[in-house]
Image (tube, rainbow, N blue to C red; front, side, top):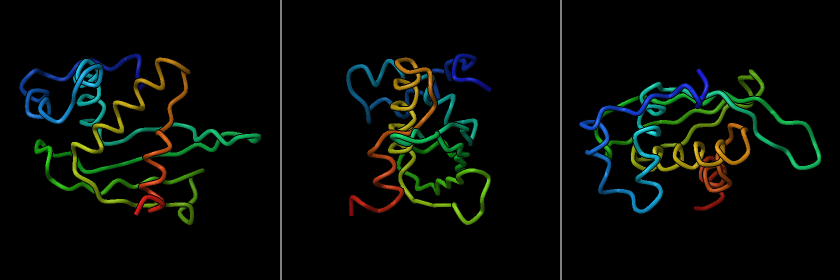
Length: 124
């Protein structure tokens, strides 16, 4: 499924997450919740000066914003290139908002630098 085909999540699902976001992020929240509820995302990590690397991200879906979820990213279909990170659902949804906003600008599906820093524990 493409990000272009996402339908906004029901208002009841969105309203639980609303207090966690401000400004333009709130406008993207219904689409981000819809993407979150799919439990996975396929994209390509852009590598400066090189070819993009395909990835599949998966996570456990819950209705509670503060519940922890395990997000797993596997690059290039290679089990040895798998990474996992635990975060609150609201934080994952925030990263998915960034994915959607980036997609609208660049037409490519990729996570933000902040997500990769968290995934690789470079921010701890």
